[in-house]
Length: 342
Image (cartoon, rainbow, N blue to C red):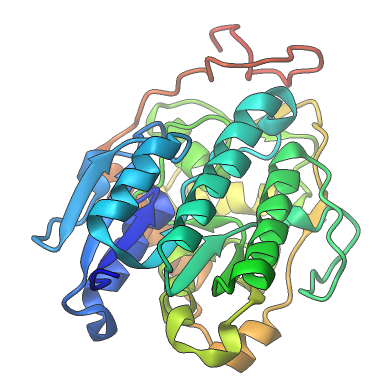
């Protein structure tokens, strides 16, 4: 077998992937390894990718199994960090085929090649969407009961990784991040990432849309805080074949988040309340397992995290918000998500 001298980062032009790539470059444990960034640019941007001679960008999709296998043959990956996904929980009800093709079948392509080429460690970003509702605090020992196709696809990949480990010995670690925000987020995406949506709308002089009463609770996580355990997974024996919640511990309401973002931009809140959608009302996770295995995570305050993201957002400016072009089911599609030019 050829010397394994490369790392694959899928979704590396996107939000999480661009931060993870930078974290890999900064960590001496990965010194001498080339980083191959794979991204189809459906939600990421070339300018997000770290500028380094150690980073090679390949435009392509994880759904292209021939491309995936060719990359594994050419680069002999030691580690795979799989972050590519279309992570719109609510919209996933209406794009089921697209969701499963990208999030499940694309992951299977990577797992197949990782097994064939004896990858040393496969790190997968799942989601707390696997838990479903009524299970707070969300614990890794809790039986997942996902309620939307996005969560179902993520949990299916978790199960497939465990099966690949049992059958072929593929080492893996699964992380379930939640409500992550920060620089390089696609603020032009109207379907996901509420912090980015709010900032983009403010810079466009538009009201902030909130589904229902805004009392939904989430623990919003600053992106750089979740990177240390993710990149440490290949080197921590207790992380093999394990699942970890990762992110912030303090929940807040979406309404309070909107007020905090408005304070950062020094404007009075202009809230547009929309009809409630089918979503988990209260979602926050316990992170004691992650702290026990990796040590305590950094914990950036929401005030500081929003300030950093806002400075970045102002530097890049507002981004256009286009409608998703592949809606498969229109029945019950929430207001503003269809082709109504809102």
